[in-house]
Length: 473
Image 1 (tube, rainbow, N blue to C red):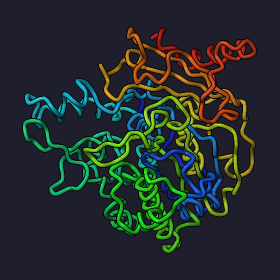
Image 2 (cartoon, rainbow, N blue to C red; image 1 turned 45 degrees about the vertical axis):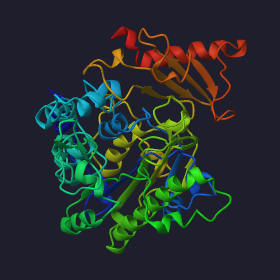
Image 3 (cartoon, rainbow, N blue to C red; image 1 turned 180 degrees about the vertical axis):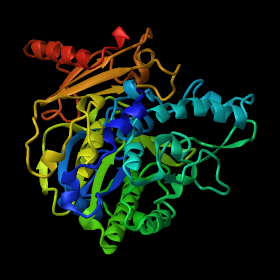
C-alpha cells in the first residue's frame, strides 16, 4: 500500500475519546513564524522585543522551550512539519530543485514553461505522502493553506482549500519573480498566499466563518518576520527612539511585532466567534534568523543574517519554542526536554482523535505531556540535517548533506560532510563539533578532542548513525 493509502487506511477514524470531549472534533490553527530566532520573544526572555500577543498565547499554552526544527532553512523545515518526517525521508531537502535558483531565474534559455516544469518535479514529491491536511481532510476537516508554502498548488499537500496556486499574481507585492527572459513566474515560496498577514487576514476569517459546524485546520504561515523588513511605520516607531535596541535590529524587531499583531488578531477572531474552547492553537518557527550588524546589503538596504543562524547547524538557526494551547485541555507549563517539529503531526493527530501508528511517523506524541498526564523523557534525542539551498539531484539526500546533528541532554554533536570538497558547504565548521548547549548557548567551545568527552562523542555518533547514516544509502 502506498503512503497516502496507508494514511487513509490507518488514520481516517475519529476515536470515541475525542468526541467525549466535545460535540465535534477540535479545530486546529497552526501558526508558523518565518525566520525568527528562538531568543526573540518576550516569553523567551527578550525584554527588548514587543510580543504581547505571543506572550499571552505562551502563558496559556504548554510551552516546549527547547524545540527544534530538523533543518535551518524554510522549505525542508516546512515539509517536515507537514509530513512529520525528516528531510532525508520526505525527499524535500532543498529550497530549489536542479539546476538551482540562479540558473532557474538567470538563464535566458529558461522561460516560464520550463521553470514551472522543473519546479513541479520537486513540488510533486509531497503528493504521495501522508500530511496533516491530507489526513485531517480524510477525517472530515476542511483544511486551508495560507502564506509560506513551497509545494506548488495547495492541493499537492492535501489541503481542501488554499491561496497558493503556483502562478504569478497580477500586481503582487510578494511572491512573483521575473526571469532573465522577461517572463513573470511564481517564485515558488507561496505566490499570492504571501499576502496573508502582511496585507490582509480576511481570507482566513472568511474561511472560518464559512466552515460553520465543520471542523477546520488553518495553516497560518505568513511571510513574517522574513525579509523584506518593510513593516508599517507604527512598528518601527516601537523601537527607533530606544537607545537599548541596536539600529540593525530595529527593522527585524518591527517585523516581529507586526507578526505578533496578526497572531493576536487571529486568536482574538477565534475567541470572539466562541470557538476557542474547541480549537487547538499550535505555534512553531520554521527556522531561526538574526540580523548581523556587519553584513549590511546596500542593494536592498537591509542587514543580512548572522552566520550562526539561518542555514547553519547551530541552535540560533534550529531552535524554536513550540506552544500547544487548547483551553480547558492543555496545562500551562514549561517543558525543558528537547522536542522536534516532527512531533507536531503525531501530537495533532492524538489531540484530534485520529488513530496513529508509531512506525508510520518518527516523531513523538507530545499530547500526554501537554495535558499534564506524562512527563517527557529529557534523555531522548532530537536529530536533524543541513543542506545547501540548491539540490544537485532529486532523491539523493546523501549526495548533498552538509551536516547532521543530534542533541541529547545538554550535549549536541554536529557531523560535517564535505562531499569531496576542501571545506564544507557554507564553511560553518572545519570538522565535527560537540557543544554543551546549556553551558555554552552560542556554541563557541568545541569539545571534540577533549578527553573527558571522548565517550560522549562516540555514543552520540553511534546514535546519530543509527538514526540516519548517509554513507549506507
